[in-house]
Amino acid sequence: MKEQDKKTLQDKFGAAVLLDEPMKSHTTFRVGGCAAAFIEIKGESMLRQALSFVKEQNIPYYLLGNGSNVLCSDQGFDGVILHIGRDYSEITVENSGMDAKVTAQAGALLSKVANVAAAESLTGLEFAAGIPGSIGGAIYMNAGAYDGEMKMVVESVRVLTQNGEIQDIPGEEMDFSYRHSICKDKGYIVLATTCKLRTGDAQAIRDKMQDFAGRRKDKQPLEFPSAGSTFKRPEGYFAGKLIQDAGLRGYTVGGAQVSEKHCGFVINKGDATAMDVWNVIRDVREKVRQDSGITLEPEVIFLGEFPPLS
Image (cartoon, rainbow, N blue to C red; front, side, top):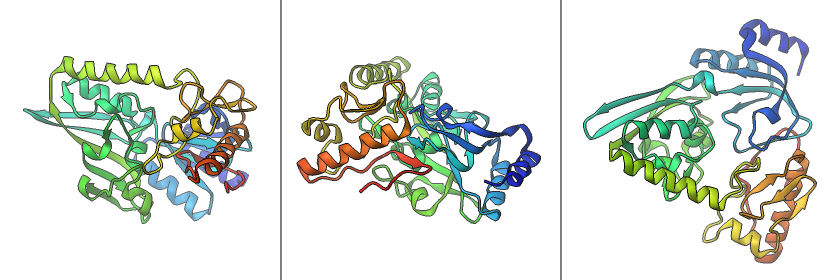
């Protein structure tokens, strides 16, 4: 990235711009090199201005939420990270009788949205309390857990289109499916979402959330940095079971490992590099394909320079 472009970004957005920012500080894998420029987005207008500039200058860019499904290369990212995080995370509740609406800006943590709903005795988002991403990312990929997913509660989504237009899309038009939404197909950027929830029993809601939290703690390696489930679920199978059956429980390259607690997770044991993680992902894919004929597709997004996965 050109030094002049970095200077222009600083002139435009001031202290919101961080140069040579370590991506390991912004991804849940806790690995990766530096982004040439990192911008904390504070609103729709700022996002549109930043996007306009990087597109005009043909600068690579990436929209980052909580970084919970991103693996950034050890060489970093020679472009601009547009971070939709804490500075764009307002949550509001409209409660009227049995039905209620919770509206959250894209940078709000999904877990926080679920907890705000619970505090208002609103049911429907209990499944989301332990998902580590932002609600923008959750909408983009139709995040889900424990038989719940975003498509079940979304009333509408506010997006920024590739043409710079803002649209409000009804939930039923979001084309939600497994790890998919219309945003993936159209390149839309999620700005905010409104969830339609129901009034419920406060204690029952908390009990359900605590039950899910207990299950996660028992079954998932939450004590280690990871991106959650590393691979998508193949139709008719479970990725973790295929990996376990291939004899890969605990398989290690450098500081990266297939979790011994849950084979669907690749974890950073403490000193992993991004290439360590990538190598484990590659080796797991190859061994599972040899054993079962099934090619696992990563849920992880690879940011920066990596070899292609065969």
